[in-house]
Image (cartoon, rainbow, N blue to C red; front, top):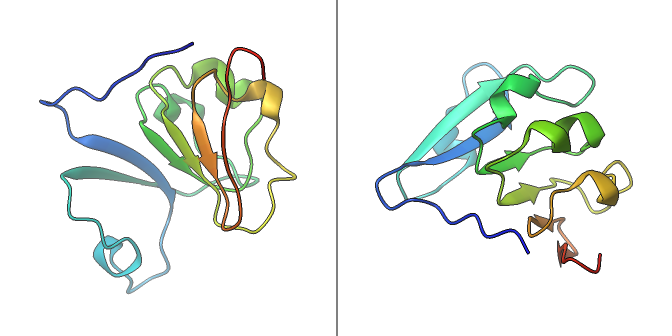
Length: 111
């Protein structure tokens, strides 16, 4: 199983969709840990693939094979929806947690 701990000397890197004008990250994501928030204007509900290479957390509704292929540091996918129809389970790297409003899953070596 993939073991990809967060280094204690590295800030958490989270990829999020661009916020509406006038909104701040702190308003939408009240997190107290040291975090590098990376806003991206998602195209077709997907971020720039280059941003996923060193992301710890991805927030979005879609995840496909192209995204999984570059997400080497990913630890979690947060899906701001009730369902996960647009998440391809085969594309999610082993050991990555993914959560919707209603479900939490972790892919193991057995799927």
